[in-house]
Image (cartoon, one colour):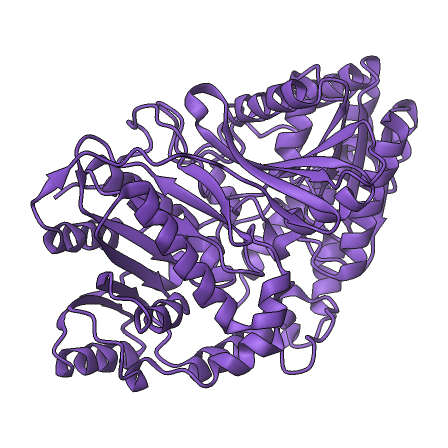
Length: 589
């Protein structure tokens, strides 16, 4: 059995080869050595589950490639990096058509005779629907499958209400009969189509072999396996360990290695020992286009190790001499929370502004860098990835000003990159947690336990509905919160002295020096925060509440957006963000 590579010891490798087809973006993982006559097609889950598991699919694809098994992964219309129009018009049929286009492209590129499908969540319904139309699907792996579309829609509806309460901000109601979770929309036509689909009622769904990775709390997974067995399908059942921790938050999602290893072993068992040379099909990356933009997927950087998408305005739109570099937060794929980066890119194109969005190394669809740590967030090594992206933009559009932008950890990376890369002319950063990572502080621990918060913050929290009940039930670590308040108070008391002398410790002196360096270079910087964001603890310490101490930095603008969450999910927060980007483009071009 071939097991997945450890990010710390992985050899240099290129990102998967990108293609634009049928209004979507596909990634072909080239098999190494002599290729098998069977290849693998991935079928994504939807929404947050897709976002959290994208890195896992890339690791599986890379490991299969090392074993001589080619694979292809793609986005459904209206999701990820795909175009949107087909989803609203054709509904669920657009997803099936995308599957068929991806399957045909996989066969063209690999010259394979048979396809194994790896489908997760709602991807099981997509794959099974397509399998009824095709004769080249030899086996299927079902990971935490959506057994019926109706139950899937019901679970999404419940999750939508939970997420709305957790975000604690006003979000627009989804369109009639549609679904919306944290800014990700499922059109009404797809929702209604899904309600009519059930794996156990598809008479034409009879794969020769299957494996079901079941969730312990979901008996429907085991029932599906029994149903497949009754149809004459050789069915294997395995546990999907750590499913909940994998699919809850992309920033802290941990890939379950046992699931990866068992899946790869099963795929290898399904494949004939017959091998042959990989096909040499003609390669054409292609473009995806709608009325006001075109998008070109590409690989770039040393060994073509990074995957990105360049979005440019249509020829009839007057161009601005600026390109926005969209950096993803945490372990989110390049399309971002609520598809913010996709929406920004296409909105900016309407204004004549180009953009590049990409995955940093070991994030989503970009492979690990050689000898990189498993935890890459808040690492100065990510600045090297941004430098590769800036180099690409300069080669494509040498006369353009370049603006970096991102949220949370991507805001941190944008700030550190503006400091390190002379060709960056500006940065618009949203809710940065810190300006320099504290030495010796564990990133993993900090992601689970935010920085110290003030008494004002906790007072505001206690005024929220149900807060006192959570305290009385023992759900809140009161002692821990008190310690945070004390530490925050001490920092606030020392803040005026620190500013007066340019910092009381190495980190404070370094942050003030960074802001002075950006001012000397006239690098424009816009800081945007949601009210009461945890990042304001850092900002207020250095620049005082309200930004009074920023007056000496003519290159820096500062803005607070009310009724916005940390991710800037509400439409008015997105629009504020977009307008700040447009303002900086106006200044630089």
